[in-house]
Length: 348
Image 1 (cartoon, rainbow, N blue to C red):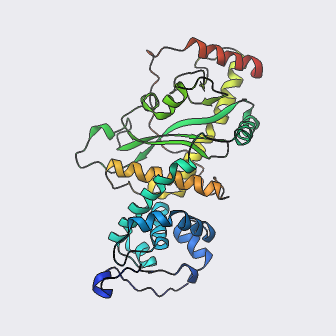
Image 2 (image 1 turned 90 degrees about the horizontal axis):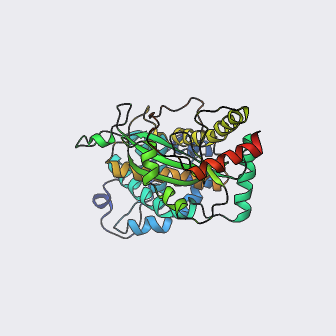
Image 3 (image 1 turned 180 degrees about the horizontal axis):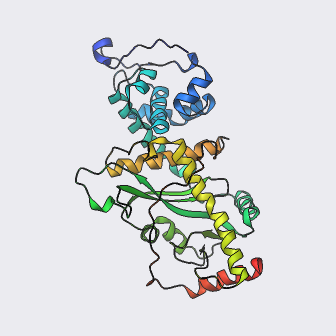
């Protein structure tokens, strides 16, 4: 569909000073297909997101001839879903590359401010129980609250070429720790960790570990792979299985844990700005972390708005940094008892 758009980036030169926002793009004049293919989301979701972030965006742009909230949201969605600031995207909504960057910054900050509303373990009992039942139907492990794993997002080398961001595979990255439920809804998303940190080191420093260690009673457990320490509230596979029950538990654990990897693949595929194969995030590590966090919030908002978590999932596994298990780590004997009881009651 051909669209006639005026490029109005030199606001003050063209229009002088004033208090009115500039509407460079009329969302009502374009097709649903155009919105979905250009910005990655359907019309009704875009309307919902604009309404959700409108007050925050207006507060951030209280200057003359500010860009309207809907254009800011479209600019940010365009970047998140394509990973590009190129002129083609800016031309689609009538703003320059510099304005695109400012819009992405504004929307990213607004989404992060909304994070506590959409990402967290605070859930009503019925929702928590439903998620446990969905996990149980996956492979037969009861009382699973969530699955946890880390994922590396490639970033451009910092100006200082900080070696702390170089992971074991030799590229610069941020190591993100995600926890999701059976539907792929994120319960935790921690994104500030340099790529050189192992998954276990990230876990030990994470808010997730602190949250559960400080709880007196945890009604269930998370599932993590063998790069995580076994805890009474964090079940890992049996490292050296001996019995048929051990092997059955490990198979069930792997099938259930795959949900978090699948969720990460869906997020990285939907939000191409996070896909190192398409182009690294070219910001400071701190800003890269913020963009990753914003995409996680946006993922949850879309799920809670009724969109399918797996719509854009790619099938191949993502190329993540590997690490060895630290043989010096001590095993919590109480956690071993909890896991063995779980295996005996449900996999013997």
